Every structure is written in C-alpha cells, then in structure tokens.
Image 1 (cartoon, rainbow, N blue to C red):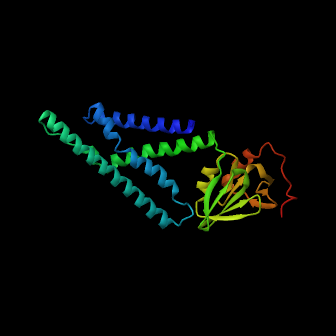
Image 2 (image 1 turned 45 degrees about the horizontal axis):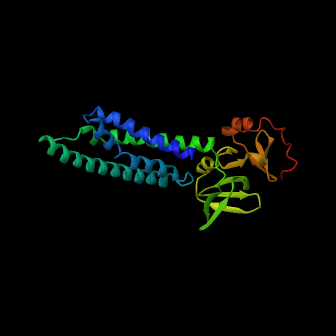
Image 3 (image 1 turned 180 degrees about the vertical axis):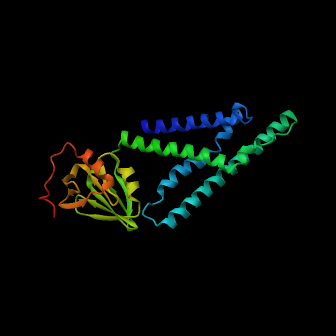
Length: 248
C-alpha cells in the first residue's frame, strides 16, 4: 500500500514538474497540466519496457529492441500532444476568436525525448529503491520452458547466466531455465542476494566465502570476479571465512 502511494505521488509530482515547464512556453496553468498528461503514458511505457530487454540477448537484438521501444513511445507522445493541441485550438479559438499556435519546442524530438527520459528514469530508480526498502514476501513468478513457476526468495539458492538463458537453482534441487536477464533478476530479488560475478547471483543466506576468489553455496564453489570482489567482501564481512571443505 505504501509503495503504491509513493509511486502515485511520484507521477503527480511529475505532472506538476512537466506543467511548470510548459507554462514557460505560453500555456496557462490549466492547459499546462492537461498537456503534461500527454507525456505520462509514454513515460510509463518506457520505464516498464526498457528494463524488460534481456541483457543476455545479443547486441543487435538489444539495439533493435531499444529502437522499437523509443520509436513507439515517441509516436505515442506526439499523438497525444497533437490530440490535446487540436482540442485546445478548437476551444481557445472559439472562445477568443483568435488562433492558437503550438509552441515549436513541442515539435522538437530532442525536447520530448528529454522529458520522457527524465520521467521514466526517475520512476525506474524509485521502483528499485522501493523494492529494496519494502521487500515483498510474495512468490516470484516466471516462466521456465513455457511452464509457469512460482518460488519464494528463500527457495532460490543462486542464479547463473548462460549465454541466452538464465538458470535458477532452487533449494529442493530443481533447476529452471528462463530468459530474463541476470541484472533484472538482481533487481527483482533485491536485498539478500549478492552479485559475485557477471554470471552469478547468490542468496546471501546460504552462501559463504571459501577464498578471496570464490564463494561456496550448496556444495559448489562459484567464482568471484574482480569487479564484484569488494561487494562480496562487504556483504560477507561479518562471517568467518569458509575454508571450502564443504564445496566440491
């Protein structure tokens, strides 16, 4: 409930911020608030779809996916801008017997893209922060070989990225394949899981340090890369190092 309230408050603040920018372009406050609504659907879509691009895809697929998403949200935004502008022109022209011209800056793709980027990125970072501050106990649902799977966080031992797929290793010994990128899994699982390598994300509860270059979990020794070495040392700093005798 609190998370939902904060997200709604963010989008209300986003409307006010966008409206304040539009008032400087010649809109009165009422029209500026209404016109700012034309940016919201696309900004919400952008903040939702861009993180869905799987970071295990090859570069060409990521680039094409990003281009299609950006073209889609830009088209959506210009559609709403023109729709509201036509409405304003009709109402204002009828009321004042004068012609209302759209500010040229609203036809500038760079300006429109900047507004969308700011709003969507702010929402994306807010959701990440809320997920860490207010973790949920609800099961995580995903698809593995076209089958719907639900697991609680504590049932997951670690995540392994393998080329175009990610493997989820569960405490009961089950293994699941999924195409969601490991970075997205890191965002979903949040606190309690530690990234130790570009290919590994481990459950802090069931892992221990076996050496400066490895972590032991479920009898397996997983490598720690140089990039995540400091994060691993900090995450496990209160533990007595595991000498690796329970790892294969």
